[in-house]
Amino acid sequence: MSVELKSPRELEVMRQSGRINAEIRERLIEAIRPGVTGLDLDRLAKDAIAKHGAEPTFVGYAPFGKPPYPGAICFSVNEELVHGLPSDRVLQEGDIVSIDLGVTYNGYVSDAAFTAPVGKVSAEATALMEATRDSLWEGIRAAKAGNRLGDIGAAIGAVADERGYGIIRGYGGHGVGRRMHMAPHVPNFGTPGKGLKLMSGMVLALEPMFSLGDPETEETDDEWTVVMSDGRLAAHFEETVAITEDGPEVLTRIS
Ligand code: MF3
Ligand code: CO
Image 1 (tube, helix red, strand yellow):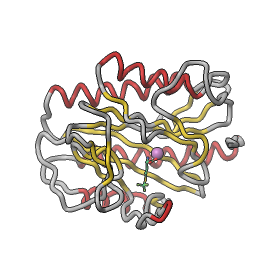
Image 2 (cartoon, rainbow, N blue to C red):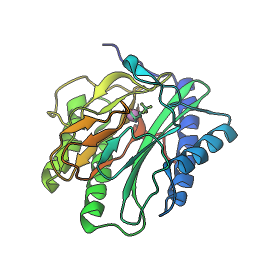
Image 3 (cartoon, rainbow, N blue to C red):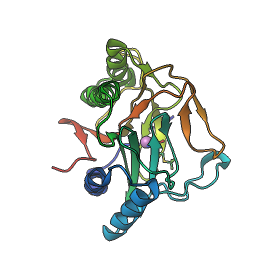
C-alpha cells in the first residue's frame, strides 16, 4: 500500500477545493430547518458547486458494483449513519441530520461532513454530536508527521470510550487527492505508536462515527444507506486534513 504525497502545488489546489467545500457547508447549515428535504439541500449543493466551477464528487460514484450514487450530498437522518440518499423525506424538529459533501476542483477532491440538529433536539443527541465532533479534532491534533495512523485512531477512540459511545468499526477515514477514496484506510480506533508512519504531504479525510447504542450497522435495500442495527442515533463528522511541516492543516475550513 503506497500513500501518495502531495506537492506544494497540489496542496494549493486541494486548499481551493476545501475552501469551496467549507463555503457550501455554511450554506447547508443555514438551510437546515424543519420542513426542508434532502432533495432541497442536494439542489442547493449542486447549484453552489456549479457556481464555483467545481464538480460534485459523489454524483455517479459507483464502487464495487453499487448503483451510481445520485446525490452531491449524503443525507442521513437519526438512525441512518452515513451514505443516505437525498430524498423527499421532510426534516422534523428534533431530528439530527448528517450531511456529507464532496467537491472536486481542478481534479482534486475535498471530503467533509457534519451532523446538525434540526430545531431543538434532545440533550442526548446534542452530547453525541459534541463527542463525535470533539473526537474529530482530537484526531486532527494527532495527524502530524512522525506520528502513526494508530495515534489518530487512538485519539478518536479515546473520546468515545471516555464518554460512553460506540465506535463504528466498519467505516472510517481515508486518503484523498485526485480520487475520493485512496490509501490508507484510517480507522477510528487504534493503538498509539502502531501503523503507518505519517509524513508531511499526506492528505487524509478523518471521519469519526459514534453511536448512542450498539455500533453494529447494516445497509438498506437501496444499497447505499447505512443504518444502525438497533435503530438508535449515530453522528458523523469529517474534515480533509493535510499533514504539513507546520502540523495538521484542515483544508475544509474557511480562514
Ligand atoms: N465521506 C464519505 C466516505 O468517505 C463519502 C461517501 S460519498 C458516496 O465514505 F458517494 F460514496 F456516498
Ligand atoms: Co470520506
